[in-house]
Length: 397
Image (cartoon, rainbow, N blue to C red):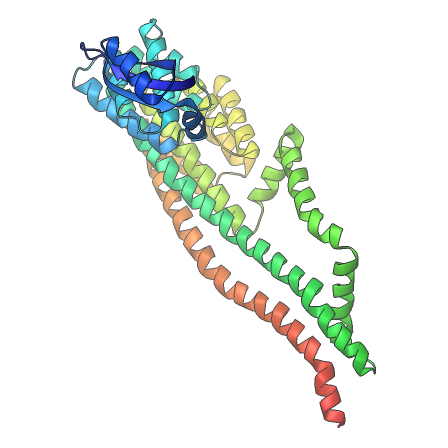
């Protein structure tokens, strides 16, 4: 007998699911229909295990929140709204998530507590906003606000990925090309030069020496990049290592400016969203620090929280950290004085998100001539070095 996963509806419209053993898929369908179930769907659990490799994407969460906001605004009860979203879930992982959440809601758990049970899918910011929406009776409005925040965050994350992946891919490709040339192409020329005799020009001797080192210590060339990546990942998991690496990232030329602007935009957007939802400022700063994405900025935000708890202003510790640009601290100071912190933070976030977009585009444009220059120096220099002995021999004839 084989195991099958099934999903069906009762005549009252209730969605049910579970596991069943049967000799075949048709036999499983027949057993379920005999129980009075309709709209029956059956899948092999072996196939289901393959589907479980799928993950719940953040985009799916955003779409679900938008649907949930619409249904709540229309007066649909929360459990029924989850049931309706569950029926429309195409990703098996998303279906399972909604199903288990609906079961918790049916047992009487609040939505915010239900979300906190799945920290891998719902961060502290999401839980705080949902909690504020439930307590204030404005859950649909805060869900829309959360969707707006998440959509902005996804766009910003995509820009940062572009900024990081592009130069990283260029470095990897350049390393592979250089390694192949030194280990497989240059030795062919070395054999030919040995047959020719005579002293090789200095550029050729340098290229041959580098090639010999690559060939002799090939294991160092091959495994060093992997060990370096593993070492950096291990260091990043420690408190001191993460702080040092995050500080290094912020001080990188070009890239550091992009990461700094992205962190400022994330800080302002998150803080604005939380204050607009009525979350207390001290609680909001803890959440903002947790989603900062950089240990240096996280520590700066926590220092600012400590300053506020002692009755001081928010801007002073941000200014003293020298992490946040002066313009940001000045605008936050104006927001504090005028009581328009929410709108001021949103404007700062808009500005720095645009700055990130511009910087990424500029970096991409700048990288293209740098790539051409690098390839010209490495490959062109190598070609010249390899052909210089041939030119010398031709000149001596």
